[in-house]
Image (cartoon, rainbow, N blue to C red; front, top):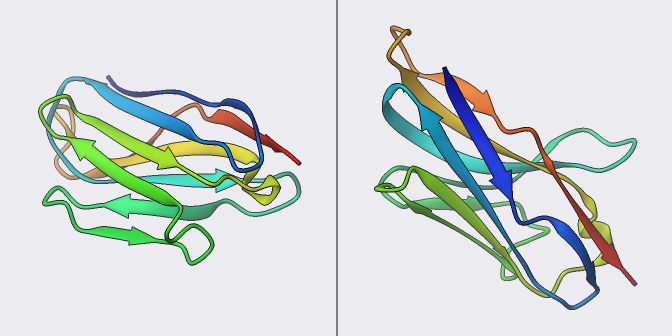
Length: 121
C-alpha cells in the first residue's frame, strides 16, 4: 500500500508564504516524477509544478518566480515553497507521484488527499 501524506496548508494573507510537504510511504521500489496540482472551486485541476528524480523542474506560468519545488529522495518527500501568495492561489493543493509499488509491474500515479491553501486579500 502506497500513500502520499501532505501537510503545510492553511490561511495566509496576500504577500505571505507557505511551505507544503508531501511524503510517500509504503512498499515501493522507486519514485519517478513528483509534482503539485491545485484545484480551485469551479475549476479544473491544474499542474502547478513538477520535478524529476534528477531535479529538473517545470512550473506553470502563473507561479513562475514565486513558487519553488524541491525534493529529498532520501526522505521520499517533495516540497512546494510558495512565496508572494495571491488570492488567486487559493485552492486545494494535491501532491502527485509516479511510484513503482512492490505489488505492481510498472510506475503508476498516486495522489495525496489534498490540503487547503487560502490566501486572503
